[in-house]
Image (cartoon, rainbow, N blue to C red; front, side, top):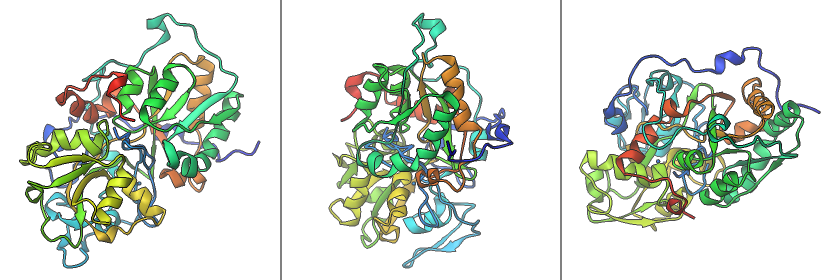
Amino acid sequence: MTRGSERSTAASRRKFLLSSGIVAATALAGCSSNNGDGNGNGDGNGNGGNGNANSNSGSNDGSDSGNGNSNNEENSGSEGDDGFGEFDPNNPIESLPQTALTLFENDFDVGTAETLQNMESREEPVHGNPPLSVEETGEDYIDPDTISYAYGQGGDAANIYQDAMQPLMDNIEEETGKPVEFVTLNNPTAVVEAMRAERLHVSSVGAGTTPYLVNIGGGVPFSMLVNQGTFGYRMWTIAHVDNDDITGLSDLEGLTVAHSSETSNSGNLAPRALLPEEGLTPGEDYEVTYSGGHDNSIRGVISEDFEAANAASSIFGDMYSADEVDPSNVRVIYASQPFPSLPVQYRYNLEPEIVEGIRRAHFEYDYSGTSVEDAGGTEYVEFDYATHHHPVLLIQQSLDVEYEIGNLGE
């Protein structure tokens, strides 16, 4: 079998070392300047994947599925388009509003390795349960004839990710000796139900759905796709570039603003948790309408069907990468700290030998130059659920999210 990528001789470098630094609570509010970057479903509702947008980047699944990673050379600052002020990479929050294009060009749609390194190591998740283990449940291990793999949801899964993730699936097959089947599922509920029923064995879902997959589906997060040292996505609050009546959050008062879906991290949970810190409460200061997905919210703003929206920068990046939208038509008035996107999970009671093969397929190969880059990444790094998903879990804790299947959106 021809492998989709060569084994990396430095697999250990993919492990992010955790320092004792603590992510400040203010980082979650998206208030810090300088290089602070730190985000509930969309799936993120969000890994969509880390979509590379031409020279920039971001996926979608009604949650926040993508990791929209911009893949540009370092910028020292750039003049904003259409009369916007200069973007200062050392004070990015204070530089807003800017066009989405300017933010992509300055990599302000993603987080960096430094962000993950500075996260405080945690033994237990701050909200919900830790991943299950056979030792705890006493269940038997499962040894499926075929490994079922899912990435993204709905149309994006079938049209983009099935082909993009073929090198990874080839390597899983090589390392486990099991054929791998790509499974297309339509929504977060379907993903969680499939893994809970042991019909799905490996999956990447958005940030907001990830805790549901852990708490209901028996998922064990272990890996995340990154793009040349960058990861994740931000929640952006956006308006049309020609709408000069909306240049800041206070301008949204009395308007109707699009959220993607009820369980979306950056499309609903994050704005409900973070925007009140900025003096704006969704559902009180503005009316919320659900668009059904980040892509719908973004297109709706560009077509001026929506006055404003909260959406994942990653999915915006995926759409930009596919030449579906022009980011110069969008004004970004708020950006959160970055959230980890699309952690990879396996079903907790898979045979240990299969799990080891799945891990090798992720960590011991360099995916640079393969179609995996179409999902926005070049390599996989270790992902610790309690530590690296802490910003998302904090948001869900603040909103008293209960991990029940009925709370997942269609």
